[in-house]
Amino acid sequence: MTRSNDVITTVLAAVAAIEGLRPAALLGVEAPSWWLWGTAGYAIDVAADRIEIRVVATRLPLGPPMAAAATAIRTALAQSEYSDAAIRLVVTDLDAVALSDSDVT
Image 1: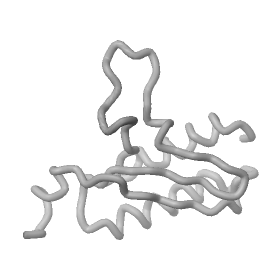
Image 2: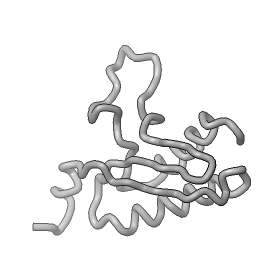
Image 3: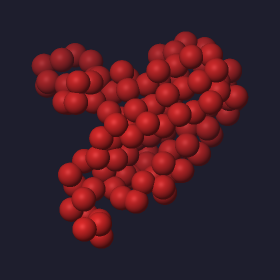
């Protein structure tokens, strides 16, 4: 895994497996159905020493899904040249469903 596209695909798969998070959509909206490509990859920035993932929280509390995502991403990248990269998860938005499904008042 050396190309940033491969890393982005790997990280997206790891985040997709976590209930309560999804990649932050480009410009705050999902891609129109007529686009031939997805926009989820734009939620990830890859550098040699760090990987930043912007996510939308769909569940509260944030702690468990964030910890699970960090572990899943670290595991997915364990055998790559990015195994020592810092992982930064940034919650950019809170989906309304997170409030309706939580005990937060």
